[in-house]
Length: 326
Image (cartoon, rainbow, N blue to C red; front, top):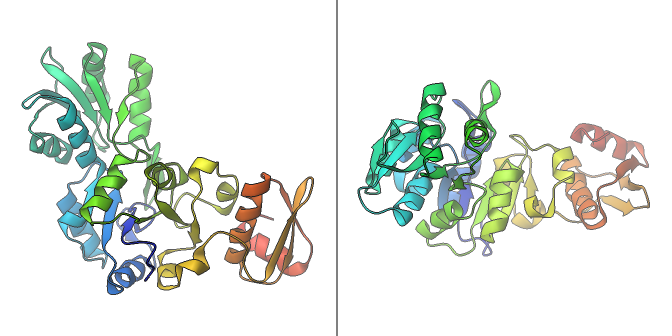
């Protein structure tokens, strides 16, 4: 990718580069292509369970060389938020992994695991080992008036086994128990993206991700352009129904598309397809690439409201079937 409009690329990880321990085909090729073009890359993840160094090591194992300094995590963002709001040495109850506790300590704060009168804040990030006892300690602290910061509120976490409960599911349990809501440090809030872009010296970075409600919504809030890939949770039907605050500028099947000119990936009218907005349906005709049809459909649907889709010829019916929109 070589595009003067984007001076860095901020990659999501889960669902974009890999599913758990399984790399997504084409991911390494796409990232390496961006590097070869001389564009800085950053890896931005809402997963707070691993240290940045561990994330970099995992990427390297998947054929994507990465420096620790290129990794931005929601645990780093949460620790930064706490460091800005608490005095040095303040006590923070950690619900999450040792990596999250290390980030808290690195911000000049004292991480603990049990509620007490000294606890000034609670920070909550994903850990597969979080249990009722952890949430109970956090509940006591939050009810006593401690600040509450969530690394992210993703309801699910993509893995090689499919979508499993994410940090947001645990956050919801604590919200129910306390009647409180946390300050969110990671996506879709903009600070994580802004910090990643700033570390690359970028002012117009491109965000690449698979989730509309985190990756794309976060890019919109941060004032950055975004590319959505269909390797994670977003489907063509979900994309067509996207609200304005969750709409990307670009669409690709996977990261191999980053070797193509960005103009070819832009959502809008595409060669080979005609989409008309009628009173009750979008009528489709033509004979081009199915993904170009989706780019055209999104453009028309977003400008005219989401409608039913009617194919006027066999090529259109085949393309819609391939997209799962028939």
